[in-house]
Length: 162
Image 1 (spheres, rainbow, N blue to C red):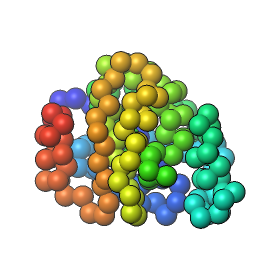
Image 2: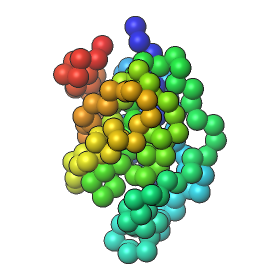
Image 3: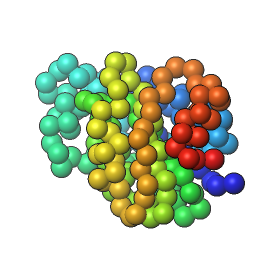
């Protein structure tokens, strides 16, 4: 049986955190929370304000928010699930920081997201381009609300993951 890691970023109300914890329980996977060195405030997440941190990061293609604490050692993992809320039809820039900070050589990376109204957008492609090492990055999936083990099993089967 392969070892799995659920790495997730959940700066707001915790919907992505709850989803990641449920997924980890279903898959019997380890959890790692991606935390920003400078935590996001409610104002930072206000996508309707033109000068909110969320908006300013989106506009800067080179923006890579720093991650707090130690990064996980991926050596013993075969599969890394990467979770985040959808921001501007893609993953938040801190997810790219994470992708660019670790060696994913030989890993399978499976993005998943939560969203109030949009799909995965370009998140899988953006992560694929940022990943260091020869990794397989699958198409991601929105996992909003309750996640049934049956839904997860079907999703993973469709990706060829055990």
